[in-house]
Length: 461
Image (cartoon, rainbow, N blue to C red; front, top):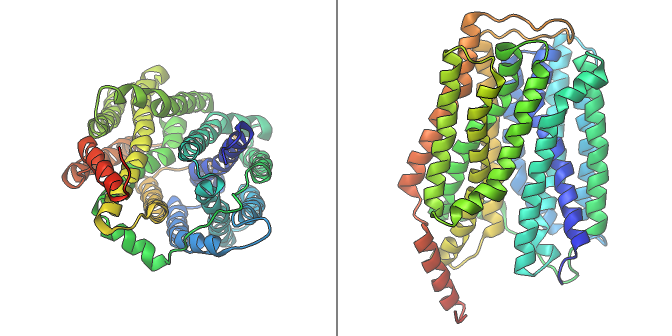
């Protein structure tokens, strides 16, 4: 059964809605509860780490639960709709925090964020897992994956572009009120988007889904040394990205500063989001015409690291207040991240063929599920490091929501610059060193593996 344009569009709409929610939470929850509510950055970071590690552990179990579900509406849609509604309600509650004393607020945040992670998993795992159940046509499967990833990037970019402007406009200058109203709008869009997806996209009547145990998931990953190499590389790259995404708003508010810091931050995020999408959709295909994937990977890591070096040098040269100069390293970093997101997905897919040749079993769903597990755990550790770092450098936030931006000491600003640049650079260097030592699936090896698999399956090429 070939997918229609309407079904593909509905699947893409679902990706836009769910990643708007994810981006709002991952990019702004630290800022909301530290700067606006007034909780310690270390405490917020600790809860984020605990919740994301718990969420990561929960992912494989959710995958098994979805696979075992049987209803008149199929396996996926009941979880997609129910998880969406619950997550939307929790999202609104998370950014509409009640007026509580410090201890009670800490308890509220701990509970609400863990609930947010659990309910998001309820809809995210079914969303991606239903791709092979929607169609058996290889071209449609590949196209649907590209549509989903691209539209997810659009959802994230929309949040980066519009959030702080809408917070200021809808809150009338009061960020606490503004975030609550923005969260409500995003929650409503989220529900509408996923309902459109659930109504329009249905699994095939003959679709089946192999159920693997959690133990089998771990064994499949650790038995495939190339999949493990890719996953650990993804962890290092994403950790650098998570540290940057959690700290960049503080850079614009307290380092660049000024009364129009939200406008500068929005412009930077807009350009960055556009460059990330262009990196995926334009730059990578152009480079691929001339270079191998492993060569492109090295160039992208080099470009991202160079962006951080340039950013640090600009700050040390007292050019942190020049938005247009800061856009230069921003373009390098975001475009490189777009390319890397495509490449790591390609490398992981190639490791599935490698694993089939090695063990005789094809474990694509298992390997991709474990990627999500490890990356979520790493993101939790990264945001905890960012939170502790903010407290260590003595950054004092604006917990009163209105009035002038709080002044920071020279040492605090210098520490923020180092946190934003040195830590991501170190992680990227570790990523390329580890990858170059452990990864062996070059273009030539991939072609050879494909030929061997075709022979094993009795397919004439």
